[in-house]
Structure formats: C-alpha cells, structure tokens
Length: 348
Image (cartoon, rainbow, N blue to C red; front, side, top):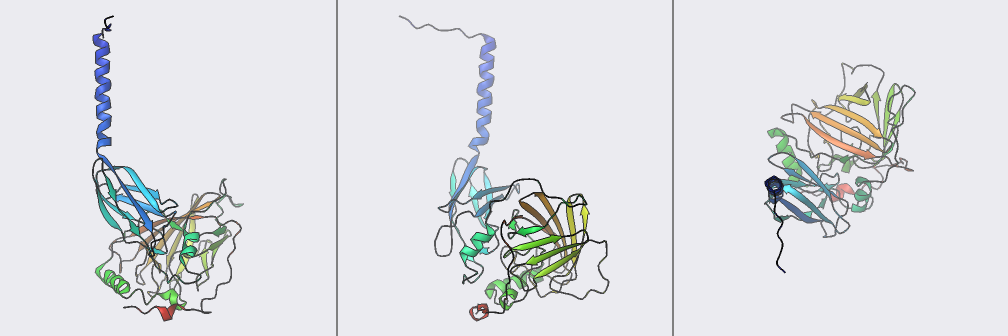
C-alpha cells in the first residue's frame, strides 16, 4: 500500500514556519548560557555545607545565589556568558573573591577554600560559626506590633547574614591600613584583647537581644565586651559635645514600618567588624545609618550605610538578615577570663 500524504494549506504552513522561527529564537538565549560549579571546603579540606555562594556578573552587576550541599558542592546554571566574581559573603570565614569566565554551553569549574578568621579554638571553632552564621528554622506568621502600631523588633536574634556583596571603595590611606592588617595576620585584632569587635548595631559573632519600648531600643550582646547599646527614640538630638566612643551615640525614628537609626561619635580604635568580609578601618568621621525592618515573625532585616570621608571614597551599604533565635537567651560572657588569643597572635 502506498503512503498517503496530507496536504498542508498555505495558512497552516505559515503557522508552522512561525513556530519554527520562534523555537529557533528561544533557543538563542539558551545557547549563550553556561554554568559554574565547584566544591566549598574548609582549610583542612573538609566539605562545608550550607554556605551561601554568590556569583556577580561583572558586566551587568547581576547577582546569582546558590547554597552548597551536604557534600560541599554548589552550581550556578543558566548564566549569561561573561566574566563573574564568585564570593562567599559570610562572617567568620575568609574566602577572597575569585573571578572566572562563563562560556556558552560550557561549565566552568571553581573550587572554593575557606579559611578561619578566628583561631579555630574551643568556643570559636568552625562548628560555632557554622551553627550561628547559617540559616535557621524560623516560625511563620506576621511581625508582632506594639500598642502604638509599630513593628516590635524585640526578641533574641541570631547573628546577621550578609545578603548583598560588600564592595567598599577604600581611600589609599585606609587601603594601606587594611594591607598592614592582612600582612600581619590581624595581630592587632581588638576583640582578641577584649575590646569591642565592631561598630554595627547588631553584633556579627553571636546572639543579639533587642528590647523595644516607645522611647528606647536596648540591644544586649552575648559576645562583645561592650555588652549593650541604647538607641534613643524619644526625639532627642545627638549631643553637641560628644566624646568619641567605641559604639558611638544612636538616635532613631520611624519611617513607616522601618526604624532608621543614626549613629555618630565613634573613636577610630575599632574596626568596622573584626572579621571578614567586612574587615575595614574607619576614622572618627564615621557615620552609620541603619534601617531595621521586621517583615515577618521570624526575620529581622538590617541595611547599614557607612559614610566616612576619611576612609571611604563613597558611602557603601551592607545588607543583612537575622533569624529569630527561638528558645535561646543571651548569657554571661566574660572576655578576660581564660583569654588565650593574644599568645597566638604572632603576626608576621
């Protein structure tokens, strides 16, 4: 029996031609995409799971995010071809950004080796940072509100996680100080000698407890020699005769559901934080603008803008989020007892 052929009308043929053309066009973006894959390990070669990995397209500044698996593997798929900066913006680890090139229909391999920014000693070991700086299970629900109708920021919170890359433009003088710190293995680390370990409202090492009243926000730190902070919400201004201090002077006001905190009056002895990736110097001209939001029951967002004409060429912003620490409470922490850090900070 001979084959039967079905005639196609001109209209149908036109539709088929259009579909083929559309399929070909939709394939073009795919053919121009590639991947980045690799493994995240610590300085001893052990796999690091749950690490946030970011890939920034250096042409468009678009940021892609991935999380390392239980075996330490991560992968970015469907990336436009181009050059990328890959980094791990997590407090407590030293992972210098690396660059790689993504080519169409190809996979670029980039393994990441993390180094401790602490001495990996008991109480400040890798498991400590992993448990504190990773994501945590949080309750669902809306953010609680005060009698005045404002979001209630009160609660015990895990340390903030960076959700945007940190790229400050350092002035030459600040860059020289940073280079000296890196060269000396951060021998002058303030917190190693029981001095305050940063300038941000929320500590980046351990738990933060916020107690909010209509006129005052109090922050208690579990790990910080300066173990409290006050943010005045009663409408007062900064004193005109401020003496420079480690934590500065903070006043706040509400802008809708966002608490905007203005902090000035710092001395120049502290570091922005004493751990990468925000290990930078500053001067007494440092001015912080912190924006705190509680979008839901389990999360606290904080965007901090740093302005310092003596250290930075332009303002830069650090975006973070903290998880609610359920069933946790801040405890007594005495730095001067059994402080073994200084003997190990030999520098170079």
